[in-house]
Image (cartoon, rainbow, N blue to C red; front, side):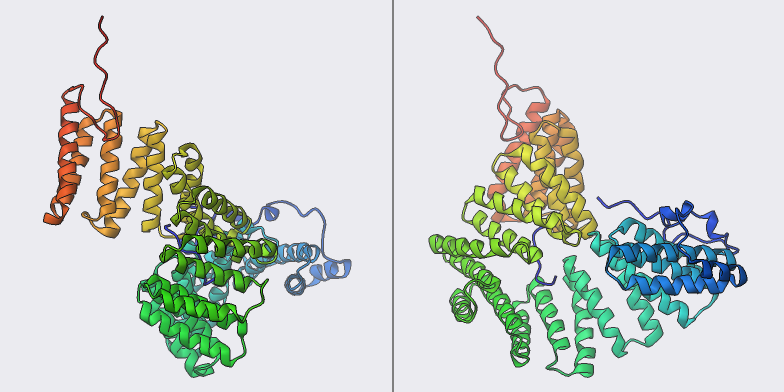
Amino acid sequence: MRRVFRLLCSSLSQPAICSHTTLRSNPLSLRSLQYPLPRLIQSLSHDPISPSIDSAFQIDERKTGFDCFKTAELLVESQESEHLEKALDFGIKALQIFEKSEGGWSVQVARSLLLLGQVSFKLKRFGESLDSLNASIEIIDSLERGKDGNSEIGLLAIEVNSQIAKVKNAMGRRWEALANLKRILELKVATLGPDNKDLATAYVDLAEAYMLALNYNDALPLCLKSLEIQKLEFGANSLEVAKVRELLGVIYTGLGEYTHAIEQNEITKSIYEALNLFKESVLMEIDTANVLVMIGQLEEATNRLKKAISKVHKESELKAFILVSMAKSLCHQEQFGDSKRCLEISLEILEKKQSTLPIKIAEAYADIAMLYENMNEFEISISLYKRSISISRDHKEMHHLEGSVSARLGWLLLFTQQVDQAVPYLEMAIQRLEGCFSKRHFGLGFSYKHLGQAYLETDRPEMAVRYMSYSREIIEESFGLSHNDSIDVNQCLANAYGTMGSYELAIEFQQRVVDAWKSRGPGASDGLREAYRLLEQVRRKSEGCSSAVFPANSLPLLPPFSN
């Protein structure tokens, strides 16, 4: 989903067989490894091979293996679970035969494991699918080292990495999938050359993956390369080129290059209009209006949206999306009553579409929730964030949205003094975001900080210090020592250590706050003055002064009771 809801953003367990594991020069049989599927380490409950094939097995073992494999391939094309279960049985039988006849480490064993991974993926047994696919990669890596430039092995490696990326994305492990998408591009470049027309998909897939991980700088050159190839292959006004330009507009928006974003959106819209793709052209108009709102061109944004809404059906989701964008524009103009009315109508439409468009609706609920939050309608905002999370939780490919919205909701609950409710949302946010984004991503840094603050509020200062320390490393690395957020997280750490009575560490972090304000020059005099005041307070408190107040929101100790 390219039109994702972007908010501030624990890894799941590692696969049993890692692709980077060093293999022996004379590898053992696959039986020396843990089989990739639980069913492989057990005897089959029934023999799926018909009597005639079973007889052939005694005559020609490998022919039987290929018969089982081909049968599984035919069955896997079905979407019916009964056929997929049969495909799994035939695939397992083929794997057992090839492992026995070829010693385990062969191209056909790797293909069989790929097939089992594909079947398990269709059955939504993602863990089992990854186990099979990682075992396949293990074999392929071994074969590649012995046969440089073997195109058959290279193509198989591309296919297996592609399936692994699908599985990881379906599990919400987007950041891990990036490694496989990068490997696919490397393999295709090595096999086909950097300008081959078949590389366009690999470039755009990797660009989209980086975009979804909010890594726009790495996404941009890949997207531009794909655009260059697609234009030569399909023509400047083709649907393929329009899709790449649409992604390019999102990337430019993420980079803050709004003029370029609007330019790409306008070109994309004109292509969609020429191809009579009405819905797509309206969505591009909405995207352009949203960018115009971001840069303060509210009148133009409103005019575009009014023109668009006159063309759509009154009960369509397009009307709802247009009204959300209209509400953004009105909110920026502080016309809160009109903005809320737009949102109310939008919600009436979206509620009817939830069963048919769950992902789009989850994104829209989150967008609307943020607008209500900006208008200080916190209870409505909290309710909508929860609805968004409830929908996205049921779709593993939407873990990035669930994580981002949980982080925002956790912060809002913390802000509105509902600390006990905030903690589980912040904990879930961290678990989801670690799987979707880099572990050094700034959004994760903010989630760590807010969870630390929540732990401090609930009298768990040791846990607070742990997560605030994680946060400080990420935020200082992302923004620098003198940025407001870096100063704030150091102040949070000083407060936490002060609460624990660890005054030496509290003084150390309060001094960091002072130094950061100093580095900002004369314009930061108010912040520096307050930082010095708190430094003096924590020093006095460390000396046992009962009237000292630290952290800033604490109360001085009461004087001893006397008659």
